[in-house]
Image 1: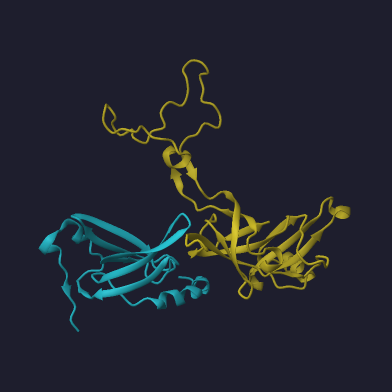
Image 2: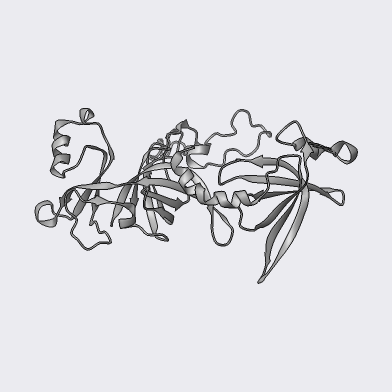
Length: 210
Length: 118
């Protein structure tokens, strides 16, 4: 699995050859730098650590400064590990190597995007778990239109089952959108245009996997 | 809007400059390409522009309203759609708002729009 780290820029739409409008998300991906390489002998598995987005030196801990120095690069904000990393070119992935979106993806590819969804706060069951609600506002209903209904039986089992869908905190969790199509690549600006939506707010980090 | 999104939308500026500038209240003819099976033909839709939405972005669209045999008909066209052959302005209208939804409740004399004279 290869991939790259990106930043969500925003959404727009483009037109395909049939004249249909396609909603797309623009992601600024890379250039990422290889900061660590793991292999089977020393670590038990193969992996590559990528880093993305400049960070001020004064905001970086001494330990991390040393880590980035080993790869001959400046401190970065986001660091992600990819297992069994493979890129198009043949040369071995080495420390300090710069990886661009066009090295990993080409137009027409399908990718998975992982991000942290927008926080929604404390939400009821209708929004959080797609419950139907009561469905009618008359026939004896009084302020119960979005209520969850019964949460279990009576003296048996005398308790509420674990994991029952109830109201609570929604959003702010790791979400993976699978099979998004790469509509277009902009190699000069390191931009990727993918069809569909991507989890998270603008300027939040997105991990793109192939 | 982010500067980076403009990089994506730049290539559509050419399509946009193909059409004349028009505003709500104008009477236009939109020539639209329609696919029926394997055949393609051009259909003209003539009416009053009652709104332009998301102006400047790639998602921009405009709504044209006409009254066809006593029934109001509205069509929404994405302005960058490759299916639009041409847009022709027949008459410039003088209106005081950007969304002319008040025309929906009117018919006959009160649904007229004054012509803009230069």
